[in-house]
View (cartoon, rainbow, N blue to C red):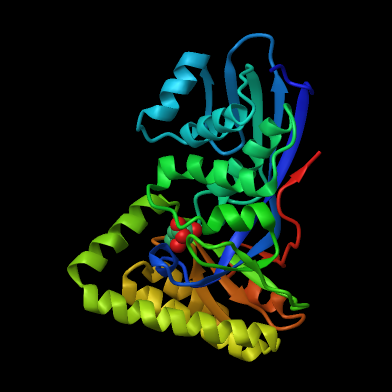
Length: 324
Ligand code: MEV
């Protein structure tokens, strides 16, 4: 099948995990939010069978069809590998292949827990798929999760789901993600600790702890479960004070799990002193970002309190993947 369009663009939002990261990999619930920053993927069909990848995220590559298909099967660590998997996965949905120029532009920091790899995979599947026909959101999510598995080995699927559907959601592995209906504003400040890290490695270190200290892990996991359920209730009641203090409590659990760092703890301390209602690391930890819930009109004060770090104010994004 030939492409029905020569070019297409898609974008997917960044995400934050408000409650439940890591424990979500082992079946506990997590609350995620899409935020108003995006990754844009532009694809143009070529007249040959090359796949050319360019991005503003410090990676690029040029692959023949054979090399691209081999790269997807072989297990090597490269930023381009999940993109090739997403590209070929999307074309396989239509039993097709075409050479492509793929341009990826991230409008937020990457490899810091904001879902850059999931958003890239989701937007790539959507952009490539739309050259040939229509893919449902569910299929976009599934194909992009297969691509994510290449790098993250054991992803819960939470990142792919939130980057596909957007909004605020309750996610449990293996179940359909449930949107949380609320008019809650989410005035957040995202602070980048400046340390990039590989999610798969942190997830693997947690898996090691789970095996060696299973009682400790189970205790933390049950507490995380309780915090997430209580947070869900607080979100429904729009009780900002409780949401904030549960975020900070969630961070303590992650610290005990061993995925925080001194820098992340220090940023959280500064943000809370600067007036944040609650703060925690978001995503895998080991570096990456802190999210702080700011009170109404207090994002600026929180930003001031973490001066010296790359930080930005953000809010909930209701839209997930978009195709144009
Ligand atoms: C990474 O953004 C979130 C983790 O819970 C891993 C996952 O859910 O796959 C750490």
